[in-house]
Amino acid sequence: MNILDNIIATKRIEVEQKKELMPVDELKTFPLYTSMCNSLVSNLLNEGATGIIAEFKRKSPSKGVINGDIQIGPVVEAYDAYGASGISILTDENYFGGSNEDIVYARGIVSVPILRKDFIIDEYQIVEAKAIGASVILLIAACLTPQRVQELALFAKRLSLEVLLEIHNAEELQHICTEVDIVGVNNRDLKTFTVDVNRSIELSDKIPADKIKISESGISDVDTIIRLRQYGFKGFLIGENFMKNADPSIAFADFVNDLKAASKVDLET
Image (cartoon, rainbow, N blue to C red; front, side, top):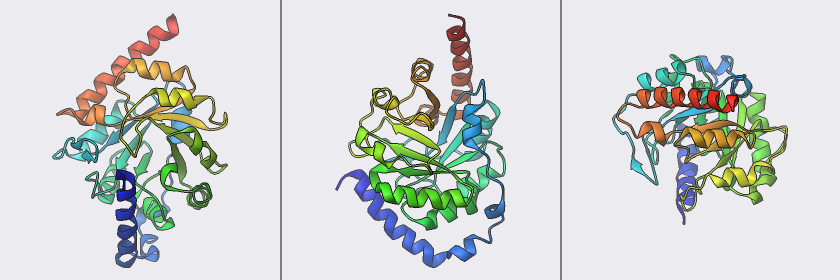
């Protein structure tokens, strides 16, 4: 079994346990369940937007502990204040050191849309995402069939959640359906964890024109964003580049300032 297979096997057990501990009907009583979702789609399409979906994660299977003791509050506040178009928060505990409480807390202090980044395989997790205050869910083509993507995406849309579908190769293009709002190309292979930003460029013209395109993983400099924009990408999910710093807030602010300066030069040339 590869890393992704192990994660999904663990997730199936976790979801069944959660259903016992916190039934769906109880999740629907959470105050945030009836709250309005903020639109990541609108933010990504705003003229002058950074397009950055800044991620908060403490560790990962490929890197181990990235920033294990960091407090989420100051980081997401800085992401919001300095122009993130969205914030991605890992809620998987076993492999990424996250929790649902991270999103609940962040939702109380930031205004930008929050992406619940997890390995969603069951409708229960979508109700859970709505209940904790997420505005967007992630569906990963590598661990779902095209039919299952459509079923889960439709379920999410009925809860007013936006849907980000993550793909890794040309074969997974068949997972794209009407109910998907955003298509993300993960430059990291979830089976081998190797990273290649050219993966986004190679798939860019194969993604339907009516879908917003974002590039995920392996983006560590503003030149890469400028280049990806030329291929129609509106969003850029970046996490480790900020989180590996002692103070991710400063790292993010500096990155955004560099991006604005580079974007201005690019427009003038």
